[in-house]
Amino acid sequence: MSNYLKRLWRAVLGQDHELQDLRDFNRRYNLLAFDDPGPLSRRLHAERFRYLLEEATEFNDAPTLELMADALIDVVYIAKGTAVMMGLPWEELWADVQRANMEKEPASTARSPRDVVKPAGWVPPMGDRILTDAGSYWSGVDVNDTSEEYFFLRTQRRDYPEFAEVQPFPMFHLQDNNVPDPFAREQS
Image (cartoon, rainbow, N blue to C red):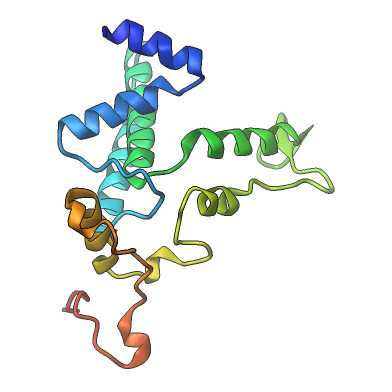
């Protein structure tokens, strides 16, 4: 099936073709593309942040509309690619953030004379519920308190079918239990 027909079919089904493009890209280049939500390793998280920052800086510094457009597309490409890597249910999360944003009201603030603010009774996005419903084990867990071991196990489950039954779970710093963390980097 041609790419045009694939995109047309996804549009008919209401699927975000950009996410599928990124899944295809990640699989082609053997990058992550999880089906269940979870955080990236600390190293990969920092790497993706640097990529986003680099493209945002290019957008800020772009002298022409063409270069602005290119940098902006790259920001979205990296952001959505990171969502694919994390296995985020993007369409559901997007719809919920859109709902919450559309419930805001126009106002003049110190930030901008044409701003939008949260009115009384405003209901924030319910990302935690959406992620839990999508199979996340991370409800209420500070991902900065997790070990690299979790990420390794999650990757093994994806790459090796024999690990499919092993359920990943948040690994907290073992130092909290007075046990040295084997994954901690030595301080210099």
